[in-house]
Length: 293
Picture 1 (cartoon, one colour):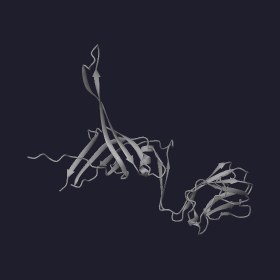
Picture 2 (cartoon, helix red, strand yellow):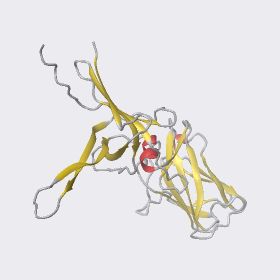
Picture 3 (cartoon, helix red, strand yellow):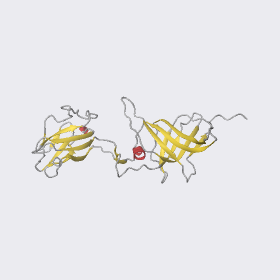
Picture 4 (cartoon, helix red, strand yellow):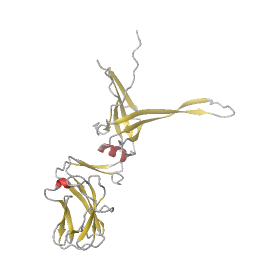
């Protein structure tokens, strides 16, 4: 009988974390640069006296880890690897403005004598530009508006900065007699009563242009600093001869996920996952190999 062809692993296809509570997947990671499952062991040696070599050696601990190099950032990855609190928003075909909050003082956002809210100018949602904005009072009824990044400034009607301080209004926005409108930005500032801003007081708000969905993630909140254990299915690339290899990691734990951003390069994050013994499956992982016909 001739020898069988050697079993070899070629490439990486996917990693799918799953919930230990019910076995359902969190999602799938497919933009992988590499993945490895490392089992490194140590030996415990008996030494003593003048002998320069060990008298005996026995098995010590074995550390099981999985290393992932990933070029995608999914919502569940922030939950598993950073203990994040994830909020997924449905599509907003007309855009949205939210998180309108006072920053300094309490006179800019004021439902009685200030700005009660910020709305999308009628039929002008196409000019909404993604990002964080700051409103700063100049007088009792006028203010300036600042835009924190020009990443989306060209959406719709092109917006412009008027100075290096990132101000976007050429003249003060006046709400003494009526709502304030910021042309080319799709923003209307709703006047409430008789505005009585304290000069220097400020507020902030966020804009989402028309979209097919969005996500908001808080990392580091005391309410959500948990890193759940999970299982993981790791699948190698399917070979041309039909061979497939799958690893089922029964219990995994990870904490930490760097988010690199480099000039003209796709982000690639390195994630280290601990692989733990699972008493239910009586093991750390299972490997399955199949030759299809």
